[in-house]
Image (cartoon, rainbow, N blue to C red; front, side, top):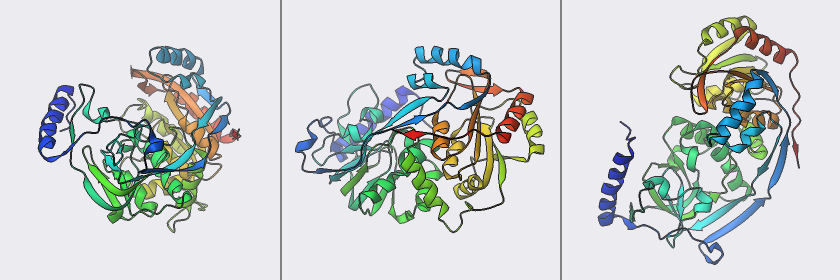
Length: 401
């Protein structure tokens, strides 16, 4: 049973802190401000900040309802302001990339909190602080004693990446590319293990099981050297996407060049949000067009990749499963269905980078809670929109500035 109550979490931390007072180590005194004077840190710069412009996207459905819904949710601080660009016309500033090497640095938690050997937090590299573990009710004094690692450890856990397939793939998985670009070898990879996809993807990228250091909520390790790639953008980044598509297409099991193409409808389990309440009727109408319904949640990752490599068109409600479009060949159509209160841009950007024709259908929210909702669709309108999308797919033309 997961402990959800803030009161229970606070009590748990207090009890653990009493234990660590006897058998742990004292907590660091705070973030380090003057990094230039730390001899234990070395930074390797790789690429400067870049800007990429994205064009308007093809849209279907209840388009006139999206703008007012987005403004209301942004004003209520439930949506980030970038969602005001819901029609797709936008520019994304991708941060500069690099790798920091921390001599005898330590790593705490699947949240990826980083400490120098001097006992200072590297909050700017981890994107978080000790408060993300211990809560906002007060500073804690002690941490679990670190496990000593005799070797160089690549840090591949940060924030949302430890619990979401999209953020893991987009923000973490491609970080191996930065280590390779900096010509840095590593003995181990520290990664979260809450879900099977983290282990599966690392193995597909050539990391052996014995190289993996599983990071749990209170895991604390100290390495000979920590290799810390820069925090990636929450949006798909072109070089990272190209890297992942290429490396997966080169496996001997790859179906990237297969002529046996598929039309896929990616369904979501009923217990999940963004479920289409009249989905059965929709799928019945799509089957004559050659679509097959698939659930990705319990499908082995290699099979998911193969399916998206073979895909001609992918249709379905907005969800992390569309992340697999990273592995699709150029020309694969992506048709995303989302409630008017949730106008995501992530997969539009991904499609533009990977040269995948893309369209979004805005559906009527049902049982809305904040920015999320189930959906009811006009089946005739959706089917006609998909036909139109297949018959005259949009062109991709994003540009780097």
